[in-house]
Amino acid sequence: MSEEPRPRMMARGLGRGLSALLGEGGDETPKALRQVATELLQPGRFQPRRHFDQESLDALADSVRAQGILQPILVRRSPENPNTYEILAGERRWRAAQAARLHEVPVLVRELGDREASEIALVENVQRQDLNPVEEAQGYRRLIDEFGHTQEALASALGKSRSHIANTLRLLTLPDEIQTMIADGRLTAGHARALVTVSDPLAIAQEIIAQGLNVRQTEGYVRARDREGAEKPGGKRSDRSKDPNVAALEQELAQLLGLKATIRADDQGGVLSIRYRTLDQLDLVLARLRGPR
Image 1 (cartoon, rainbow, N blue to C red):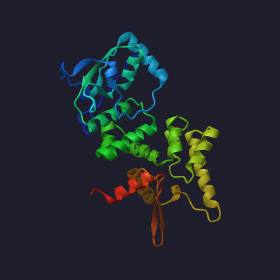
Image 2: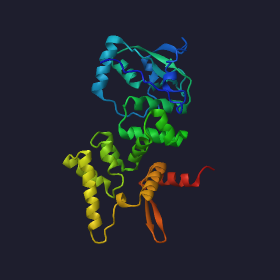
Image 3: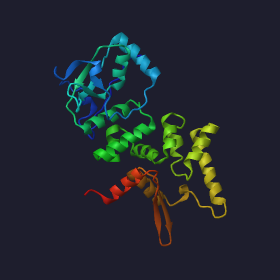
Image 4: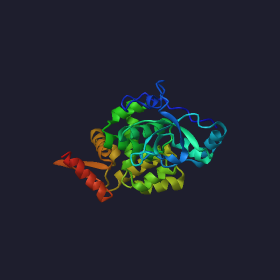
């Protein structure tokens, strides 16, 4: 297996861009490029990836054992211990080097703050499609909440559509159990998107897995349940049949809050409901309503 391809990144919205930070501009200095003992490196605190495929990692280790590390690992000095380094891009290469029993690896040292470190970690993984959908959504949410990026800016910088960013963020409105199902591969992002507006997503998710439904079958199953609910005496039509403008507002609220929001209109105005599962989530909603102090 050959070494991972170098990511191509010219994202003006995300710092100087990963290509520039990796030295593709040809202005590298000997001081920035060096050999560092593998034990002096540590995973980055902003690494959005939580799952590393062992088979793929073993194959990369075989390549590293035969050819060495062809692309330097991007690092910064650890804020807690200046004698060690925090990995910003290239954690798979570092893990493979350890498995190959290399004593040293080539690194590029950059003096970067937390903002750029977080951006680079997300950009590298998204471009290589290394993240599962939940990790990707959590990375987007962090860039929006902590660093003030808009969905439009992220879409432009990452080469994604705004609808992709929005739909991915919507996954975070689902119950934690469903997010776990997505992360471990039992459900796809397509399955999950069909569950965002239903009233009992966990029960339907379990049924999808039990029956082995594909995404199209899942969408049909959800529509059939919607029709059944609307036809029952006193039954209410699902969110799929409500006013498109109201549905769009619900989606925007869900993206802003990271929680499911429901708007029920009536003759006297309407009711806005925000579903939370923990007190921490409720505190977050209140903090955003209060605004900066």
